[in-house]
Length: 73
Image (cartoon, rainbow, N blue to C red; front, side, top):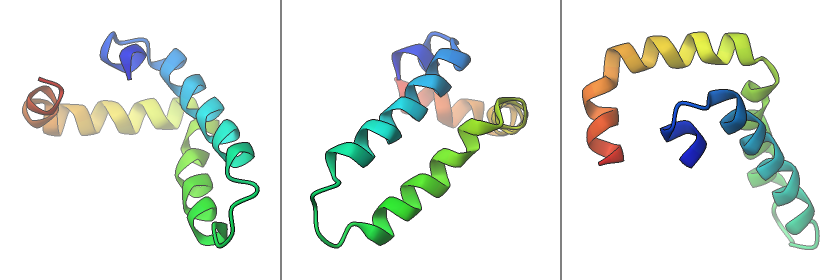
């Protein structure tokens, strides 16, 4: 989150991708995580296309910047 808040979006995207990989390893021994992991992996797939992700993030930020700033505060 610190990277995203500081505007370092590439670092933030790489961090999120690493987080999902680490999470997958950490929960490997857990039972009944199949659906949850599939949902997390589907969410994380957006980090494989940074250009598309940043375009979508930029558009969403422009539409919702007041709410985003309030949430961060």
